[in-house]
Amino acid sequence: MIDVSREEFEELVGEALDTIPPGLTRLMKNVVIMVEDDPPPQAGVLLGLYEGVPLTERGGTYAGFLPDRITIFRRPLLAVCETRADLVREVRVTVVHEIAHHFGIGDERLHELGW
Image (cartoon, rainbow, N blue to C red; front, side, top):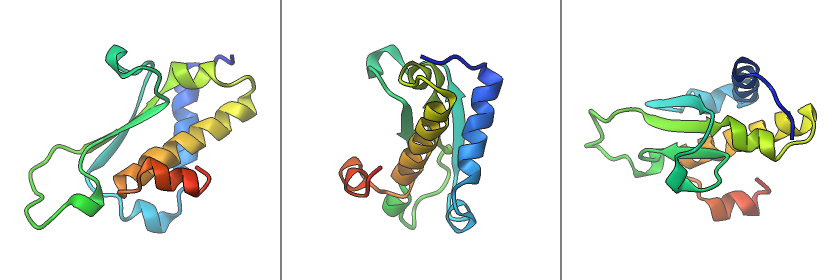
């Protein structure tokens, strides 16, 4: 297990976001990305969580909704990593995975694509 401060972890999430192609980030609508130390107790072990209405499910009546939320969980990610390089990689994979959910890509397809 590796340990980094909350501030440094948030910077790693920001760096992971910077690796997303600008064409994709421009398409992200009504979504906020947050960092929390731990997932909710009832959620079990999670590295990240997407909550909201995927872009593929939004219709003409989609209006007035609170922003979708992507939450990246610091402590579970630290627990699965032994080195800083591991952490950088796992944070990026988690960020990409949750953003994919925002675009309507499910877990099965993500696994097929190697994510």
